[in-house]
Length: 431
Length: 129
Image (tube, rainbow over all chains, first blue to last red; front, top):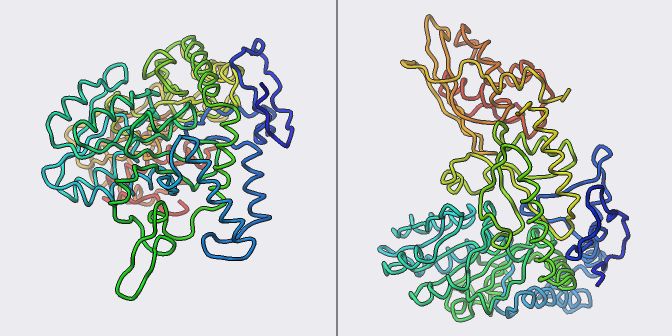
């Protein structure tokens, strides 16, 4: 199967030295991404920071450009041709985005990002349903986006926020969840699908079933899952599921919140103003139907169109193939990182149980210096606390370096990272 | 030779001068680099309006550790009112390497924590500094 759906040929998908031929799991789609025609100091761009944000295929860039140059108008207002085209583009994008996860368009809400999606639930559901004596449960694995909104909610409402402990493998054992739920006070459990630091894939379906059996609501942060593996909301059973466009080959400025209809129907709005109302008079207002009740103001229209193109592109590749490609690449990354003396990685040791990212430290070299030295070889990796400071404290490190893969990465990229790390070790005169 | 990771930078990183605790001390401060979660603290002993002795503690990257270590050699013996007047250029010039915008915070962390301890104002550097 050829996965190339680009209109532009960049010629950037040439095999790299050290790649040793094309394994049959590899996708070979780098040529679909215009940015890889760029060179840095004469070296090809090697991007291993898809956990932070993904690069964009030409089909996404072209879809946004074509929407803005040919159809641009505000949505849900006009009767003229452009306005109708914009309505069709925006609503069509929502259908595509919902369909990508097997969700209903009516319960698929566009937000700014995952942070706003979680805040929507923390404010609109949390403030009405969590009170003194109640608890919110999360895990030690979470990104700040899935911690701070719950801290604020619990502080304001006199509720307790408890964290499920991570074991030495970087996993959250289900019996710990059972013990917490058995205390009988949990109103909402919020957890990540894939850890952005450790790469751990959580057993979401088992967890949401337990949460529901305990009479609580579940929210899953899918930011690191949706771009990288098949996600079927029906089988995951989450009450709320949030993810973001820019990590999923789409633009920044658009996130997605899927919710269960019966819960969304009973909720008050989060942000209020234009577009989210059915009618307004000087004494009050009534709310628009789902999903518009939760989309106040002019929405991110071009961004939705771009995200629609991104999920079309990923569907063409096939998410199972994407997962296989990234799992094999992560296995290769783990294997080659083991060659680097003094390197220690954190998280589950097998690629089967982790998403496409690896966090690591190198004895005698700070994470920021690792990233700086990788950049000398044209390799982009992340360094820092990855917006997960509480987890980093549990791990006993202040910062790690993180390499994360996407559909456009190849084994040669991993080879380039290892070469850069070895060169860095020589500069640091490490034994 | 690498532009950034010069021999003396790596030497100060691996063998930082004036690192450890200093008890008793007259002034102290602790700062975090929000970019990476690194932290750097300082203990200062004062005599006759000058820094008599000083020790840094904490952890960080080669740039922040080397910058603090190199600065510490200049800071011991310096009058407190002179410390209060030190600016970012002083620390960058002392470090002697080209520092990118993102690593500037690392390079200034040592001076930031010392100025915080001496002046009680932890808002430096602000704006274009």
